Image (cartoon, rainbow, N blue to C red; front, side, top):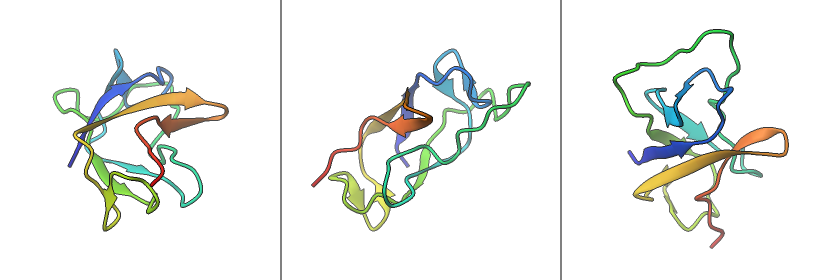
Length: 92
């Protein structure tokens, strides 16, 4: 599973110092490459010793997607408009 190399969405409960600590995230809702695991909460969550990884990707039209699994070496997540989006998404 590819690493979440950088997450720039500081308000996410799983983000600590631009590092994702969710054990696995899901990307995409078939129309937009958003991080579906993005979650705002007053306290931080996840496993502080773990680096987040991409568990599933619903963006079948992405160059890095094979069988709904991300094959990129790592991804970057950042806030775009009203959500946390995968900036590594590349249309085929």
